[in-house]
Image (cartoon, rainbow, N blue to C red; front, side):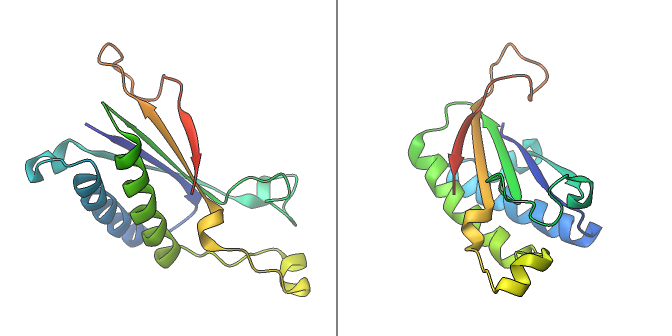
Amino acid sequence: MPYLRLHLPTVSMEQKRFLAQRLIEITLRAFHLRSGDRYRISVEFVSHSWERSADRFWPWARGEPKFTLEVLGHGMTKGEQQAFSEEASDLLAQTLPMKSTSLLDRLLGIETDAHCQIAFQFGELSAAVSEPYVIHADSVAA
């Protein structure tokens, strides 16, 4: 079953619950899973603060996305990955704070596309691996 890990700034517990429920629904649709499989899909949130970054005034200066969603599963096709990416991008763009917190961005009036701030990483989950995050993943930009 798919494992999802979402890297994002700190969000409330209510937002995490909402996102987890919606991501599970998207996973069921995109990967053509049965509704009973919803209890076998894992969603993990990894929160971080940009303030600890050396680039706190311009945290995306190195080209890093604001959010990263890792997806690990068995036999995911490119079509399924694309369908998942599109739906999840829309959900995250509508739900999470996409406005820049950088003072320089605000002063210069720089606005970035919300979908460009989200990166997806898809990886094949080996049946022999018990820990889902100990494999190599392919990166896909949203």
